Image (cartoon, rainbow, N blue to C red; front, side):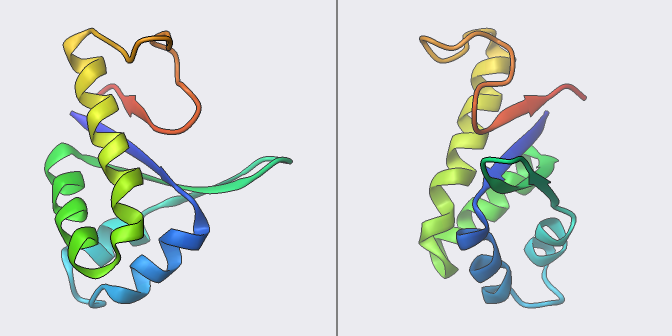
Length: 102
């Protein structure tokens, strides 16, 4: 299952800087997409569930402020996979994090 993690630049860049350049998590983070709208700028990280779990573990150790966005992405992807989106949201992309079909 693919997970899309949406994270603000204020958390993304320090988290990226905290990771070793040769590490798996650094590679995953470097593959992110910068998404801009007139209202805000975000970073979108598309990865597998295992990679997202790895990022979450790393975030807890190196930059805990990034962990919430990662955990939200994982949880939403799991809910969508199980067919029960968060109460109050439809299955279209809620504001924030969303799952991408493989």
